[in-house]
Image (cartoon, rainbow over all chains, first blue to last red):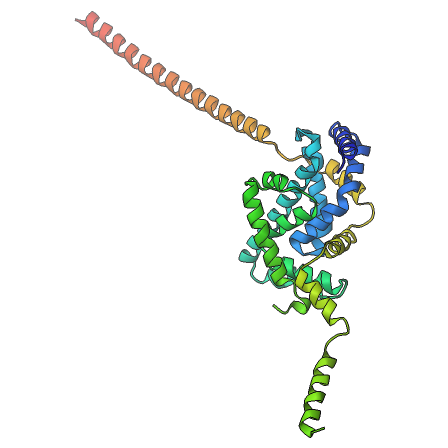
Length: 182
Length: 122
């Protein structure tokens, strides 16, 4: 993002922080597709996309006045998205422990190839084999976040991010197979 | 050509016919791992699941739902509860102590009266 775009974004965030509804709407529209993509990469569930994206943006509106540096908005938003998805996955895991039979009803897999190309289907399958933390890492990289920003988001060091990212990429490549041959 | 050679050639032809026309490209594509285009497809697929009017719905929901309780509010609520409990304990203790004092005083008063009566009798 160039400096003009960064300044424009910071202005928009400041206006949204003051409670200007037009600015809040602009922010949502500007980021809704990216957040939806992030949520989908994290959960691999199309039916979660709208609900979780909505939760992310509601949290964003409510917590916006607590954001100290408007220039850090993107990192902050994707941190919210990551935490929301991880919470959802934890809740899902807990629900599976207490409701063992709920799994079949809840976790209905989307038929492969129903809407996807072979490559997208392979990517979804490969992502599903990774730990949520690794999926978050790869999705954050795809969002253009730097190693330093990711380290801040995940509350870890840049070196640790690089090592984990390397491993996550290896695993993704390992599971990225046509027709899920692994 | 020998029959055996024929057989081998047929076998190879049969095996080769099982491969897709784009076998080499496809193999290379998957060997390289997912490219930016696949991630782009993933985003497009996800974005298609947002119903029109998403931003308006989010803003409406954010206004309609009661705000979450902040840490400050939780602390204030906890402190207020503790203060009320402490006040109740102090009041209860003071009342009990007063009642006890009054009973003791009445006992002593009665004892003093009885002592006076005894003095006068003597």
